[in-house]
Image (cartoon, rainbow, N blue to C red):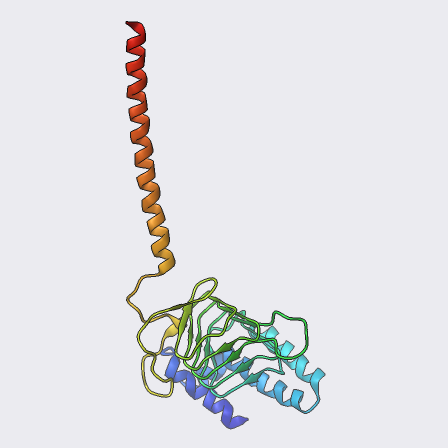
Amino acid sequence: MFKTIINDIDSIFARDPAARSRFEVLLCYPGIHALILYRFSHFLWKNHLKLIGRFISYIARFITGIEIHPAANIGARLFIDHGMGVVIGETSKIGDDVTIYHDVTLGGTSLSEGLRHPQIGNGVIIGAGAQLLGPIRIGDNARIGSNAVVVKDVETETTVVGVPARVVPEQKIESASSKKIFDAYGSPRTAESDPVLDILLKLQDDIQTLNMRVKELESENTELLNSAKKWEIK
């Protein structure tokens, strides 16, 4: 477990330019604190000391603001950046080299037993405020944009944004194991505009056009009324 924690700390240097030393990361990063306590509580959970494991996860939540159920399965080198408000449910599974930002929820939508929470592949980035709900599967190297609400599976090397989350076209995402560009907050690398914004802008143009037409019709109606009054006077 000690070697795993060292790997967790070292992985932060690849993804956070603000990290300056291992000691600083160990001392000042709540994501590492939550992860260390999770790995201990998970060990206790697997060895049938579930109450103690759950209590330790509660202590971790109190200290860090990050709630990880001790039954969740988390791979190597998870980086929880900032961390406050992160919730990882009981049957969640997270692969290797995953990055999660603050206010992310991996939540369940069913009260039945069994798989209820998201299954996250390797190299996935989940932006701040994203909500992943239900037993959905997120493919390797996928990107979840900030504040996206994801309720369906996401394919490998795909970026989704919006509410509900939708796929956006972008450049091909390189493997997380290769030293390529890191997409902070799951932001898509694309020059294309947001389709929702395009629709809103078109609606705005249509409203302006209609307003102009209404003013034209009002002006024409006024002229007709004035002409009618003149004929009445004659």
